[in-house]
Length: 578
Ligand code: HEM
Ligand SMILES: *[C@@H]1O[C@H](CO)[C@@H](O)[C@H](O)[C@H]1NC(C)=O
Ligand SMILES: *[C@@H]1O[C@H](CO)[C@@H](O)[C@H](O)[C@H]1NC(C)=O
Image (cartoon, rainbow, N blue to C red; front, side):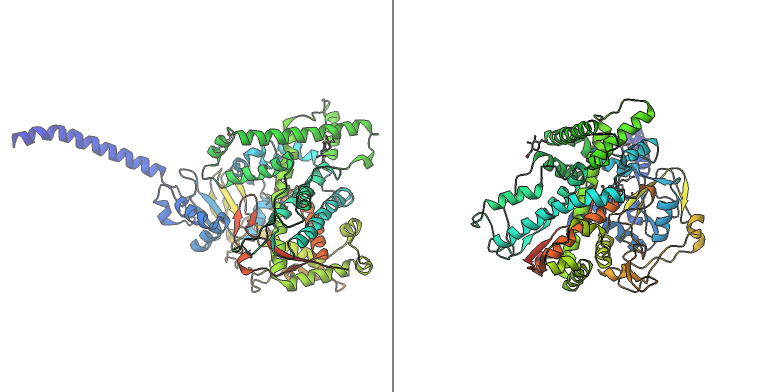
């Protein structure tokens, strides 16, 4: 008894200590639990888990690799146009907005409330001082001044278009070779499309004279294996595989630039991944290689500029030629020395390569898949092309670059648009100050995903009462279409309508589309992307029939990174003889 009493004194202290620890731990635990924004639906179980929704998300993403699909699923499950998820431990929730009308309002009319997010800038950290990472302000505006001329119809139609066209001829040559070597068998088109997209964008950036080409490297490799010695088709494979060409170090660096960003985007802790990555030799090599090469191109362009007459437009053969002229003009205006060597200029140029490459190649890959799997769409594209280029068709030749950039082919535009619609990456914005969205209070710094694959895009819109919407949203009249046409189906006709004189025209405003974002921070290169897609798809459809491929090689799985990229893209081609 006595012993027990004696023992009880220190026990009481221990108990007090334990209780204090428990309270402290519990407070810490509560402090670390996800903090929902009041009034916005969330997954209740996730709010009681220190890791929030992250375990569920990673379980799903490990299988599907499609984080955007997981987001859309949360919005469906919570059945709300605005909901929240807790993905980054101990951080603010992410908001998911699934409504075209309100997303358009945020992007077009609420730039004072919502801007480029720090979240997406962190994911694009390797792009350095590329303007995509800046908030809308002086630094952003200064970078955009360099790019002023790049999307002008004159430059696109007379310089960039023909340069991309020339690169596309290489792809046609490569595929003629592949058709012969594979004896008409199926092969993967992914790398070829990736290469031609890269070649095309580099021809735009550095000019048609650029003497490195991923596609030509591939052709050279294949020309060396005429006897099918190196060409593989194992028993279990349903396709022929080819040896890979050896790419110029800058082409490798350009592809690597995309790969490092994908790695960061897919990391649970992007900042840590980037920190670690920066210390690796391969990252340093990639960065060094691209900087050296871009600087060399800039210097050559500067030398050409100073050796030509001022204002001599014919000298302008590339985006870089335009950029250095702008830098010279800006320097004169601001009474400073031009800085052609600065890292910001180099980052801007390379940033455009990365922003353009993976996105345009992904788009092309989806288009090829749809054309392969839907022969009636392919037939319609070819018929439309023959109608658009009657001389080329009757003379048994290819349409020329000049014909291509001039022609209007509404059905082809609709195919490109429809492929973009079905494979978007959702853009994000960050609240610049405390504000409101659909009647809810949104704290400063909150990241909002504008879902491009949820309600009112791929599912019917949520009913939302007008008074929940912002004043500017209520004042606007959004475009909506007939939602009873299956929104998940590939149906290019939804982008076509008859004009006053009864002609079929392409209508890019026919319905919801967020593939390029919108507003002043929407995609800068949209016009170039359409031009490139038109040229490459035309040349492929003109020269080759895309025959059906085995079901097993035609899945619709994808990975989300810079773009929503199809995992499989196999083709079985047959040259069209004219
Ligand atoms: C199919 C091809 C493409 C797709 C789907 C695409 C998509 C996008 C998206 C979703 C954004 C963010 C928009 C936003 O936040 O509202 C963006 C931004 C951007 N894109 Fe594209 N893009 C494509 C091609 C290109 C090309 C060819 C270029 C360059 C020549 C380019 C240059 C840019 C730039 C510079 C930005 C940043 C704009 C800014 O922050 O002010 N993109 N793109
Ligand atoms: C490309 O041209 C440059 C000169 O502008 C030359 O130094 C280089 O060796 C050439 N590269 C190839 C792969 O032909
Ligand atoms: C990530 O790093 C950048 C730059 O080092 C910093 O500005 C940003 O706040 C960091 N983001 C997070 C979420 O810690």
